[in-house]
Image (cartoon, rainbow, N blue to C red):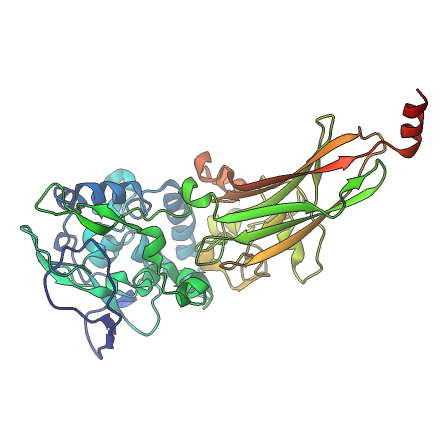
Length: 470
């Protein structure tokens, strides 16, 4: 088992500093599958207890998907209406019955409450990734963090990374592991029953420029700010209290600007009837991992380009194909169907599938990693992924160019032509969301970036001569 070494001295487990020493232990508490049913619910404090002192941090956590990881609408539907039925039908994926819960409701997993009752029943599974769960983790089993192989040791001592502070309520133990990217990787890396890395956010980060610069997950998703971590208790102000925001794909503010786009015309002037070319550059400007990352099988990022002529008419431009293998899965198609395995998972005969690209306009470029089921069809069931299509996502600081051509109509009015490039993001394929009854806010598009430029359209030569004669 790998476990972070512990620095001496008390701490208030809410602010991250870094101690890089990691030691390997031959034996220790269980992690991963072996931890199922090993720790009862009552060993963990509820979030309300923590909130009595850590008022603001607890409120931030309560707003996050960490706290909502089990009760969140799409996660509930995916688990109870897809994963559980599939685990009963297909022996190869039977492990997901407990495996999904290892990260989405860790207290239930550790207590052996499998499957947990629905969120409407109000069990402690609803606490999701709770305060005490994270502040009880001491390390992970093995060499690579993945598949909930964290080691939890709840008790009087609460763990974090700040030394030299005290709490009147609980013991304090410094544990620098909580300040590492590996801590996050225990749930943000996942290998499915087919041996495929269906979540690899930590592994993607490990290969990133951010990792080489020493920027870890917490620097972006738990930014430090001057604050009192325990205004409801005996806390004091520190200049670098890690904010417990955990904001990511479900935060519109985090999405905006994560990708940048610029578009330019190759020509400076054109005439009706001529063909013009536009080139868009799309950049992963902010994320220290791929975009999209995590559950990339269900997330859609696309580039939409349109021309608005001098008369206000809009003209949608499809992307020019590049010709790489599997590219058809990265260009939106109204006709393409996918997700046929939903029918098999739910026992529906002759299920033809759903619109592969949902609301994405025909011909737009999609930045995605297609997840393929054992029959080679695109799937949103990550546990049923046997292989991948082409990885056409955006790596950290990676830029891609996309080309668009347009033949200007003979009837186009002379004047200024506006060219607009927009990058959109949907957290779930809209066709899947609508079919399964997922609330629309889970799959409505979010504008991530936009850029506009202009191109001058001259009157045809004969038209100019006629105008001059008049």
